[in-house]
Length: 317
Image (cartoon, rainbow, N blue to C red):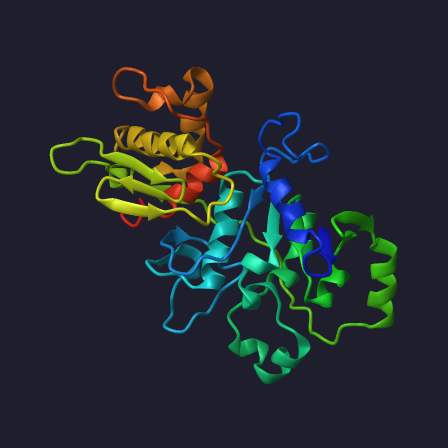
């Protein structure tokens, strides 16, 4: 677990954005001369209002009022905390081994509950287990995290490495951070429990139907943050590692391609594997129905599952 901290406007989020885009091939002179990222690193964030279909968020959120099942959580209008929990579960479902998180785009109550709030609202009445209490467990399971934090010193207790940014220059502050954490111990209660990987999902391919009117497949990408898919408008501004419209168009074509497959319920991991295998063999044109079309770009499993998870018509098998 790596913590990136420092004063405001000193480059913390800028460094994280460089890591986000470090998953793509480097071009000399593009500003990433000393940035290398794991190919499966994924940026996760909160996104009020997004759709969620049957995602297991129970490792972070359980016992919601109204007896909502958080092992198969579904919502047409997710909150900040449930959307961020779902984003992590989806990233892990796609095989990611590194999470990139910025407090500026996170739900505060998902990231931290300090000692005073724990005293005011008893743990038994709080359904959220904050990321702070799961990040070490994730690390022990082989899932790394890089977290930008400027406002919560409690994260010093769980970091393996601490970097501070000063005028866009990084410094190793691990030893200093450990000294500060020892001298000023946190009063918060560390919540017990163990990390449990999210349950796999099975979807009905036919629920990915992209038809509209007389058109078997209706796809349009007006901008990088919108996909018109069949009768749906899928908002993807929060999928920050999409870098050009050709990727989004190719993802839409891949989902439509899957919808024409065997109608039997299909595990999401198998869905991703089939799409990526086809793309690896024949490029994103593998998903087209007729003559090859220019303007398609390759995508990762992480962005494919992010778009899939925002389809409001998605049905579980």
